[in-house]
Amino acid sequence: MLLRSRQTHDIWHVVTGFKTDGLGELGLKAFELAQTRRNLAVFLVGGGLLSILVKSPDVLPDLLEQIAIGYRMGSKAKPLLAQKWEENWDKALSEWRTELGIDSDILN
Image (cartoon, rainbow, N blue to C red; front, side, top):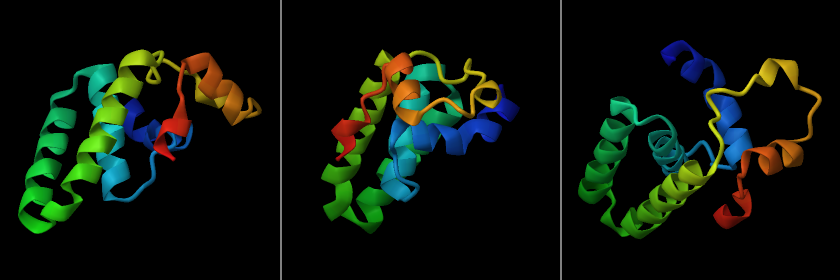
């Protein structure tokens, strides 16, 4: 499971629409938490919250929004870890999102 998570992390960014900046990474970790219940995801989301509180408390509302969106999106979506991405490179992104129940428009 850990290997597959590492192998597909960037694909998850594309499919979910979360950016690769700090807020996007934590939003995606919240998505992962909802999907997998991995301890590492809990640790990283919690650590991200503490870090923002200490270093940039003005960013806290944006971070909390990304975490909430990620968790809700992950709770509603079909399991991304179970997808056979390699067998469907030709499938359109919009088709993936529809099949998986991902509404990335809420990130904009």
